[in-house]
Image 1 (tube, one colour):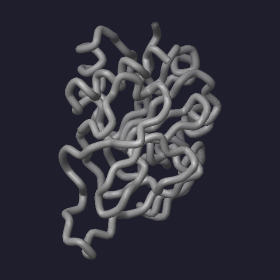
Image 2 (tube, one colour):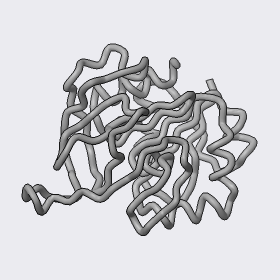
Image 3 (cartoon, one colour):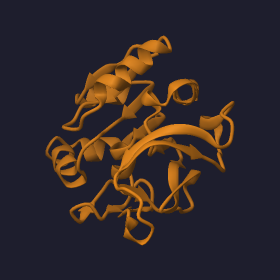
Length: 196
């Protein structure tokens, strides 16, 4: 099983590697098109800012490469947001794999803190990615922007309002939470992704 983690200027790759090791897999961290294209599964993680990340991907033609992948791809946090059509974060056109728009939380209405940092539940779980995951399981989130709910939503979370905590279209999956920091539930989701 060849696993590739897309290397770009966004943090959190190390913790994804460790999480994969904990469930018995090793992965190659790479920005090499051939290595990514030949992998059985591709993980597109990220912590950072949308416009900087997109310009880095474009400079290296990784934007075109990601869109063209046919094997299962998992975007995590910023990775999932970049797979959407557009992000309000610095007015960024993203990869457009999912038709959803990424918006900034407007918490002043209810006095919640932004970014959302900490544990929150995921519900209305759909697709094999959440096989054996109990509805309303808790996962770990760190984000100030969210993907609106739409036709590709496969899990929902409430913070300020309901939003997409996971998306799926064809071979592309995205999770807003960090499975690598979400204890046993997160490990189960990573395992299911690898088994897809």
